[in-house]
Length: 129
Image (cartoon, rainbow, N blue to C red; front, top):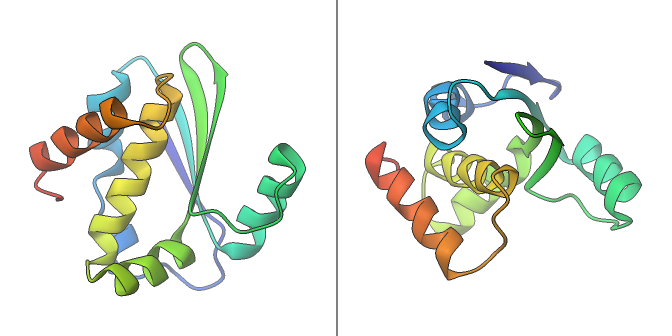
């Protein structure tokens, strides 16, 4: 099960609405995982990062495992949209990459070649690369 909450003032652009969050989450975490996804902006992302990681910047994604089969992801839609423009990709593809990145962190993966290969494989599977 995935619960999606939006905390940004104006509705996210099309990329956020069209990203297949539930299907991606089930593919990476399985059907029994309970995931809360918060679509947020810079302010909330910075506050969460400051309070939980003692870092003072607005990250693009934050993942928090809450148990073996439960977790929460904060996806900074505003930063993802800026990054998409800077990297010459679509907001949908950038949001999908960041979301999948967060999902693999919840599965226990750390940054590195293995995680990048898993992300790429999943994004190709969903035609999001």
